[in-house]
Structures are given as structure tokens and as C-alpha cells.
Image (cartoon, rainbow, N blue to C red; front, side):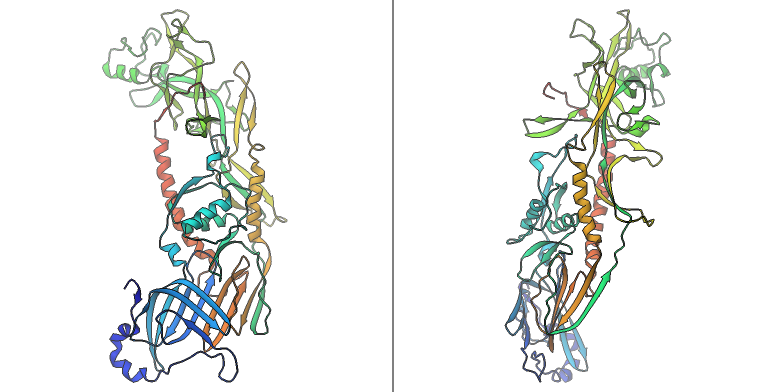
Length: 589
């Protein structure tokens, strides 16, 4: 059964008693536009089908296979499962290779038995399987596009089409000029392509020449003016225009220096400044040798001190003692920047891997260093002995105790430390991250609010600049360097095309017309059933029994969205509670 489809005889076995008196009433029907006119005869063929009495096929936009319905008188022989569906009318021939018989049904009436077979066009292969993987147009911590991952939209579309097994296709109408981030992990390439096209108001179009073209919506040929036009309709589409289009990017990434305070874990599990710990010695920590704490009698308390005291430091304020973030304003609380990251906005070029990477977060300050004559370092010295960051708490965990010697060389004090790190800012009261946005007003305000276009790969970065004394003196943003507004404008241009007012037309012709879909012609139906007709729609779809393109695409996107949200939630949970050690930063970093 891999190559043959069951005959109508097998399907009709259950109706054997009913079959005998009815079958003889069905004559062998051949196509003719009209018995009284000298017009060409319409024919439809599919390998192995012998007595076809009618056929209809609708070719629409998108990756979902079009469906042809072929009606025939039941036959005793099998026909092919795969083959070329042919429509012919005089010199006009339309061939659709790679089709596949999908399902069949038997209809019995007073007129006889009719076997109806649904045949899918060759796009059935696109949905049946396929795989593409790749992560392209990645941006580093500074928001810069990593050269090794750069791909234009046309290059991405080409990757998908090749993974779909296509050749001779055209992606020339896919607009370039942006570099959208895509992450495909064993993704169906047709689904990946359609999602990519949706970002640029484009569609995947299978044309009557059996080639695939990426087409811009609304751009294409007019319906042909022919004397055989039977019916025609024109409609004006008053689209629902919002007040504005607003692109919303990824969370803005800030880089600044935070003062650190020494904290420890208390008996109740809470994190507190070390002078507020319940097991703090009566004379304080100055006489306790870091890492030993022999002056603490209780073993459990001593274990807590060895775990955290002089090892854990928590962010408190900016280096000037305020909560003012350059390029933003003043925070209400530290909670607005939690969780912090493990890296900086700044980047470096990794020669080993040949790509730009984010620099790791860095700690500087004044601390005891037994490598320099057992004394404290100058303020601003880089700490390089290794540490990890507990991102949700803003805590730096050092591999060994970090402290400084007091004025009395035998006294121990918390080190004066600063952490320079990247972070997002959650705005109150929504607690949503501040994001880059770009808005374009479309018309006089009607109260609809903006229509949101999300592009998380467009990220603004804000890096605080410091004076020699370690105090902030300004900030630098990446808006101009990475042309954020220009990138946003291109995406809004594509979204605007989809909203443009226009007219739609629907024409039916009394013949077989080779009309190929493009960006404007969205649907064509060929019917051979006694008479031969062609129906085509421009900027519209005429088949009410086929879900509109938007609904067909949304069904796929909804499945993807649910899966993506589940994976994102899982990943965020893992990352929020990770305690990964940051690699030591070498001089090259």
C-alpha cells in the first residue's frame, strides 16, 4: 500500500446489496463545457483514476497543503497514492506534481455511487516532516550583532527552503536591511519559514510553475481581464487602524558599580549584615581570624560563620551612596534590579572561539592580599581570585574569605568592595523590565492605543561612565551605534503594509486560466464538473470552507508559543537559582 490507494470496490464492499441496482444508472461521464457549444473539453487526471467525473483544486498562500477533491465512479483497480494532478482545457494545462491521495469517501444516492477522493498538493511533505537547527543574529552583552552569526532575512529564508528540499525558489522580495534573531532547534523548516515571513509582512507562495516564491503582501498582478469572466465583485476593505504602531524590544541592560556590604547566613536561614547576626561575638568580628572563627563556641554557629562571614557580600547602593542609575533615574529599592546578571554590557573578542563575548562581572576595591607583602591593596584593585553570583539576591560569594586589615594590624574588617555588573530595571508598579520602544503615530487619536510589535532582539544598553575617583560622571547608550531606531522603523514599515487600506476583487471565468498566486492574488480555484471554471481572489480569499490564512497560521503559532513559553519558564527557573562560578577574568578581558 505504499504506492497504491485502495479502489472504490474495496470501499463499497459494505454496500454490495445496494450497489447492483444503482451502479448501472451511472453513465460514463466525459467533460464538456457545454454540449451545444464548440468549446474545449475540460479534463482532470490522476495516475490510475479511470472514470473521473469532476475535480476541484484550490491553491492558497502558506505552508499548509492545498486540497483537491476528485470525484469518480468506483473502479475495481487501485490507483496511485502519489502522482501528478493534471487539469486540462484545450491548450491550457495545469500540472501539480508531488500530490498525495489523502482520504476518500463513498456517497450513495438515487443517481448512483460517487467516490470522492481528497488529494493534497505537494506541500504535504513540508508539514509531514523536516528539520532545521541554528541560532542566528545573536547579540552580545553590549547589544552588538555577532558577526559569525549574521544572516539577512533572505539568507534565513534560503536556509529554510533548502531544508524543505526546495530548489529554483525566489526570496528576492523578502526585505533585507535587518538581522532578526532566530533560534531553531530541530524545528520544522516550513513552520520556521512562515514565522520568519510574518515578521516582514511576507507569505510563502507555491506558484503554478511548481516553484516557491516569498511574496510581499498586497504586491502583485491584477486579475486578468478576459471575455470569459462570468462573475466579478469588488470590495473596499476598511482595515482596523490603531492610533499608532509601537515596537517593543528586549529588556534594557544597564551597567553600573554597586557598593557591597558583608553579609552572612543567620540561624533562621535569613541573610543579614554580619553585625546583625545572632551569633556575632560580643566584641565583634575584629578579633576573629577569617575562615576559622575559633572564638565562636557553638559548632553550628561556627559552621554558619565559616560558610558566609567575610565570604558573602551584597549590593547596597551606587558608589556615590545613592540609588540613582545614570540614564534612568532613582530607584525606589534594590528589588527593582534583582535578579542581577553575571556579566557586563562591555564585551571582548575571544580569539579562541573567534567571536565577541560579554566580559564577566568584576569586583574591585580595597582588600587584604597576602601576595603583596601581606597588606591591603590600593582602592580600585581588581579582585581575581574567583567568585560566583547569586543573581536573585544580588550576593557575591567568594571562594575564600575577603577582608582587610584595620588600623591595628591584628584587627579584621570587611573589605571595601564594589561590583560592576549588568542588570535590568523593573518599573513600578508593574514590575516589568524597562524596554526599548519606538512608536509611529498613524492617524488622529481614536482611543485604540498602540498596536504592539515585539522584537526582543532589539536591546538598548546603558553603561555608566566613572571618573578617576570612582564616582559616576555620565553614561553611554548604544542607540546610534546599533541604529536601533532604523531597525525598528523597518519592522514598522512591514507592519504598516499589512494595515493599508485597499480593495479586494473576486472574478470567476468560464474557462481554465493559468493564474498564479503572488503577494496580491491570494487564492485560485479551478473546477471541472460538467463546465470548466476558474475563480481567483485578489487581496482576499473566496473559499469559505477553508480557514483564512491568518487563522491557519495562528494555529501553528499558538502551538509554538505554548511550547516556547513552557521552555522559557523552565529556563528562567533554572537560571534564577543557579550558582554558577564566574571564570577568572584574564588580562585580555
